[in-house]
Amino acid sequence: MKKQIFDMYDKLPEGIDTDTIKPEMNIDSEKIKTEVVTMIKAGKGKKRKSSFRKKLTVTLIAAEVGTAVLGTIGVGAMGGFNEAFGERFAGERINGIYPGGNVNISTNDKVKAEFLGIAGDKNKVMAAVTVKKTDGSAFVDYDDIENTIVIPDIRTVNCLDENGQIPEQMPFFLSNSSMPQIEGGDYLYATVSAWTKMKFSSSSDYYTNENGEDVCFDYNDYDMRLTDKNTAKMIYFIGREDYTLIGETMKVKQDKIYILHKDEMLAENLVDIFLTNENGISEEKREKLASVLENEKKIVAEHKDSLKENQTIIAVTDREATVDNYNETDSRIVKRTLYTVTVTEVPVQLEGSWQLNYNSTEIDINTANGLAFENVPYEVENLKAGSFSSEITIKTDNDLSSFGDNSVYNGWVEDLLETDIEITMKKGEKLKGLWSSAPIGISDISDPRDGTRFTIEISYYRYNDYNNLTVWSNLNADEIVSMKIAGQEIIAGK
Image (cartoon, rainbow, N blue to C red):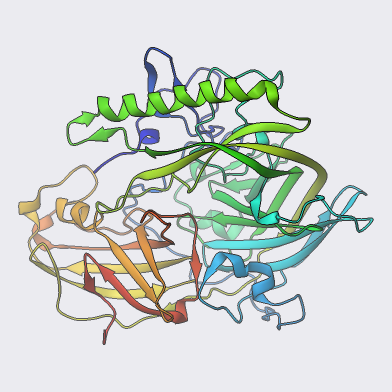
C-alpha cells in the first residue's frame, strides 16, 4: 500500500509531544534533510493517531445517549440548514439541524457570537457559530470577500517570521485545518462520557487534559469564512473513528480570527505529495519538491521588502493533503500557491461548549447482487449512508489465500481498498469516495481460506479543476443515486 510523505516519519525530535505535530517540510538548500512531513496535531498528552488503523473487534454503541428530547429546528427558528451549513454540502438539505444542549458561549466585549446549531452522523458532527462586531461595523473595508481566507492561526501559513525574515523551514501547508490543542492556546475537542469510556478497549484510547476532563483521540477540522463584510462564520468539525459523539460535549476556544485578503498571487505549483514510487523513495519527486520550495524562498526574498503595512506572504494548498488516501487511481497532486495578503487580526476570545444533542442522519440503501472484484464474488451486506460518510459491510466466502497477506489483512482486501469509488447525486454532481477508516471486525486474519467480512467507512470528496480532490465534502444521503466501487454499481436497481 502506498504511503504519503507524512506516514514515513519514524522518529520525532526530542521534547515534542507526538500529538502536537504541525506539518512542516524541512528542506535544506543542498538536500532534503528529512523524507517526511511531521504531523503535529494538538492535544497535550495525546498519542499520534492514524485514521487507518487495525481494529479486530469493535462494539458500537447501540443506544444514542441523550437524544430523548431532541427535535429538529424548523426553518426560520435559527435561519435554516442552508444558513448554518449550506456551503459545506453537495445537494440540497432541508432538515437535520439541532440546537444543542446547555449552550454556553462567550467572547470579549468587542464582538458578539451567535450559535447556529449542530448537525451530524453518529461519530461526526459540525457546529456553526457566527461572530460580528458589537458596534455593528464591518470587519473589512473591501467588498471582494470571496478573495479572503479566514484562519485561527497565521503561523502555519506565514512565509515570514515575526522579524520579517524567511524561516529555515518554509511552511509546507499540508494541513490548514486542524485546530491546535496546546496549553494556553486554541482548542477544539469533545469530552468522553462515562458511557463512552465503558466502550473503549482500554484507557489508552482517551486522556485527561489540563482541565481534568477526559478527552478522546478525536480529529478536528474547521471551515471559516466571511459570509459578508460584517459576519465571520466558523464551522467546527469533530470526528471520532469508532464511537458515537451523540450526547457528548463539544468545547472550543479560539483567541483570534485572521482575515487574509489575497492581494497578489506570486507563484503557483503542482506538487506530488507522495515521495515514493514502486521502488521506494523517488529521487525525482524529492528533487522536484526541493526545487519548488527553494524557488519559493527566492520569490519571498524578492518581495518581502516591498510589503505594505499589515501585508505578509503566505503559502496555501488547495486541498487537505493529509487525508488517508488509499485509492490507487486518485491523483496525489496538490496545488501550492504563494500570495501576498493583507492581514486583519480580530481578537475574539471565543469560548464555547454545547452538548451534542442531535440525531444521526444515516439511511439504509439497498445493494446490488452479483458483485465481483479480481474475479472474487462478494456481497455488500449493508450500506448505511450518512451526511458525512457511508458505512459499508463487505463479505466473501471465497478462498483468499492466493492473494497473500500482511500483518493486518489479506491481499485481496488491500487491493480492494486501493480501488476508486464514484458517487453520483440526483442532480448529476459526481463526488469521489475514499476508504477512510480501518476495516472493522475483519475476519481473514486466522484463515483466509474462509473468505472475509469487514465493515469500513467511505468519506466524500469533491473534484477540482484538474480532476483532483478537495477536502471535506458533505451530502444529503437521500440524493445519492449511484455508488460505484472499481467501476461496478453497488446500489440495487442501478
